[in-house]
Image 1 (cartoon, rainbow, N blue to C red):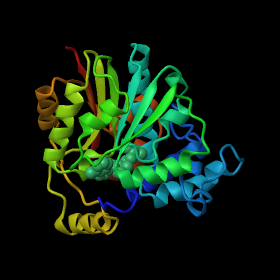
Image 2 (cartoon, rainbow, N blue to C red):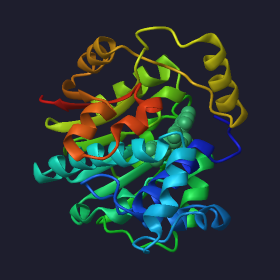
Image 3 (cartoon, rainbow, N blue to C red):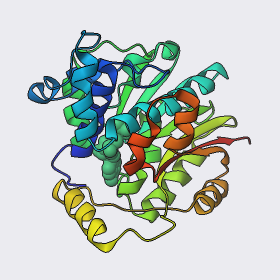
Length: 289
Ligand SMILES: C[S@@+](CC[C@H](N)C(=O)[O-])C[C@H]1O[C@@H](n2cnc3c(N)ncnc32)[C@H](O)[C@@H]1O
């Protein structure tokens, strides 16, 4: 990504969560009111007011115009939130958000009251987030900001210096990031994550799955062009087997690997609307020793 500009894709997904908050889309209602504070005011003003009688009606055109991103994010958030809750219930007291963007879990998840949240992100994105988050009160015990560029900075040292303990289990969330990184950066980051993960640590990572049939060239060019314009061209993709093998190499066993079809079964909602994003999958893995 560009080194001098906050991530635009982080803004898109934050907007989508804000829209998904306006009226429930799944049974696991998303309550990301912080999205409004984290977005630039003109963009935030497009989000329908939560609970307003017209909220659902006003939400529909945005769900359609987002090509399903709003529904995808409602489901993806529900699946990752559940993985975080399960980790906290199992006694984990450190949450590390890798490529945090405008993720507001530290400000919206009540289960984090005894948990320290480490927000790791590219310095350009993080400067913007810290500035916007000043008006928010965390629900987490502590929020620590850790500026890191995965392609060149020393993540291990930065985490240590921020107070992360490799002797205590962590839950790592790597949401919507690996697809913008080269494979080497994914592997290098995983080796740091593994070394900093005490037994019973968990990792929830989303990844772009390799399509069974190649994407038509015209569509692929259009996608590449759009993401290059915002400075975030696509990077790595993996088959399920490749991703599971890579995680295993770093000591994490995959317990669950799903996409929006399965999330829709678990949480309700309109999984068919999120079809354009179905290639993004979520693997939830545990490090047992
Ligand atoms: C699509 S956003 C996802 C943000 C957040 N995880 C979420 O789901 O809302 C991608 C995030 O990856 C981060 N990112 C991309 N390349 C990065 C890099 N080389 N080093 C650190 N962060 C990076 C961006 O700063 C951005 O916050």
